Image 1 (cartoon, rainbow, N blue to C red):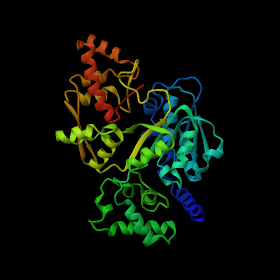
Image 2: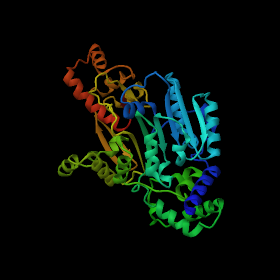
Image 3: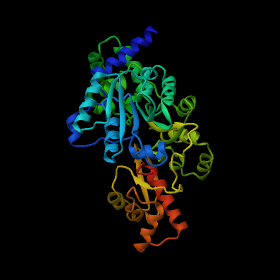
Image 4: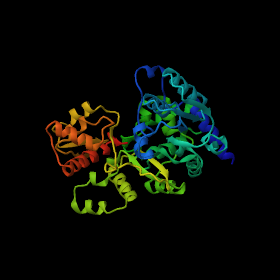
Length: 415
C-alpha cells in the first residue's frame, strides 16, 4: 500500500510540474485541435449509432482530461451544432486544469465543469450517469486499470459509450527498456535532474538500442521536458497487447465497436499472397486486429470505442442502415473530392507501412455530394441529375467500395 501511495504521489507531482500535453491557451485563437477519440462524428458513428438528439443535455465525462484537448474539441463541436451539453473535465493536476480552464475561457465555452480529483475515486464522486466518457492516455497510468474501467462502465447510461486510448506494446518497443535503464541510472534524482540525465542518455545511445531504432516514437524529440518525462520517466506506465485490450473490455462488460483508423487494423491491407490473405480473412475480428499489429509493427497507441455489451442499438452504423447519412470527418467535400478525382486508389504510408485502398470510378462525384445531411438515396438521385445515372445495385457497390476506403482512414463516418 505504501508503494502504491508513493507512486500515486509521484504521478500527481509529475503532472503538476509538467502538464501534458503542453498547450498555450493563446493558440485557441488560431486553431481547434481535433483528433481521436471523442470527435463528435466518431461518437455518433461508434457509440450513439445515429444522430445525437437535442432532447436533454448530452452529458460527457472527460476522465483524466489533462490540458484539455478532448474537452475543448467536444465542447466546441457540440456548441457548433447547438446541442446542449454538460461536460465534466476531471483531472488530478491543478496545473493541467488551469490550462484547460483558460482554453475554455478563450473560446467562451460555458458547458464545462472542472473538477480536480483522481479517476481512482470516480465511484465516490457522485457525478451521475453519462452519455459518453473519454479516457485518452490515462488508464495505462493507473494502479488498477481493470477496476477503473469497470467503474466507468457503471457510470454510463444504458446507451452510452466510452472512447479509449491505450498504449500498444509492440509499437513502443524500446520505451520500456529505456525506462528500466533510467530507473537504474537516475531514479534517485529529483525530476529536473532525471530529465537532464535522460537527455544525456538519449545522446549516448548507440544505433543498436531499441529506442534509437524505433523511429515511430518521438515524444521525447518534439514535446520538450513534458514529453521526455511522460515517455521515459513515468512512474507508472504499461502497454497492452490485443488479447489484453479485448479482455479488459470483456471484464467491464463492454464490447469494442471499432478501432481508429480501421484500415490499419485489417491484415488484408498489408498482405498480397493469396493463401495468407485467405487465412487472415477467416480469423475472428480480434485475431485479425492482432495479426495487423504484428505485421505492421508500428502501432504505438490503440484508440477504440466501447459500448455496454447489452446495448440495444447498432453501433457502428452500416451504410445499409435505413436513413444512414455519410459524414466527412475533419475534411471538406470539395477538398477531398479534388484529391480523389481520377484516382483508382488511395495510397497511404502509415509510418513506413504502405497500404493501398481501392476507389470506385465515381469516388470524386459521390464524395462531393456528402454534406452530412443527404442520405444515400438522395446522393444517388443527385448523381443521376448530374448525368451520372446508376442503378441502385450499381450505386451500392460503388459506395461500399468508397466507404471502405474512406472509413478505413477515418475520413468518412455515418450518422
